[in-house]
Length: 326
Image 1 (tube, rainbow, N blue to C red):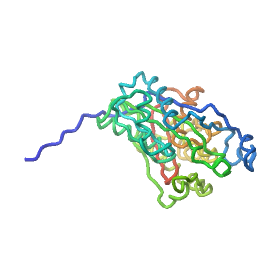
Image 2 (image 1 turned 120 degrees about the vertical axis):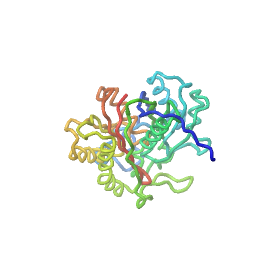
Image 3 (image 1 turned 120 degrees about the horizontal axis):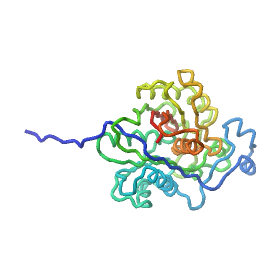
Image 4 (image 1 turned 45 degrees about the vertical axis):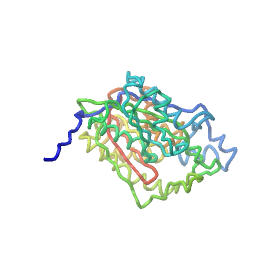
């Protein structure tokens, strides 16, 4: 008779118990960019809605920025380094592929013997990573999972390329996920559009970001709102129950288009929408936790609010889920 494989008892659900963020000190305005390329403040604001963004300093790395955000999330959760069992880092801009960023963050924070791995779903990375954390906790493989989105996009951006340099920026956000008897994170609605894999890309090891702006804009403004609506359906909540919509901060016009369609599908008119893009730029996998944490600090979001997040990016990947704000 063959042996029976035993599984570890899990939890009925998971929830976010801490958030943290890190924004580099260097502020770069549209007027600053106008000094090095053919652009101006009005042109940038009209097309992408950005007024300023943050660029990493000489000592900022993907790991150091992620660790700073993570330390705040762990502290807010009332935990210490010894309580973290697993670390997932969403990033598409590591300084090198080996060693991976998650284990570097573990070393910086003194987190011993945690399971660590990086995940690259580009700008959809945080939603992908949050989904993995939820699954890991519910299957009993970890008690507390640290989720980090950290990006240094400027290291992979041609400084004078008007199509990308006005958009991309740097920063990090983090969340701590733990077990819960009542689910605080809903199922993920995710996928990818394999017909547009070249729309956002870096060619080769020494290349820079290329983005087919109009292709991405048309795709995002038509395909992404249904992904968000599906996430609410999977979570068993009505769109009218959603308090906050936080999308990937890619472009203010895209954010507004998604919000309009979500409201048309049943969300409330007073739905609060994250617009961190205006002062932070596009920070890829870091953009959702950065935006949500800023809304909390501004008093626009409160503990217990029902949040709907949806992200999309290179691949073209997309993901969304509903969760309670810690």
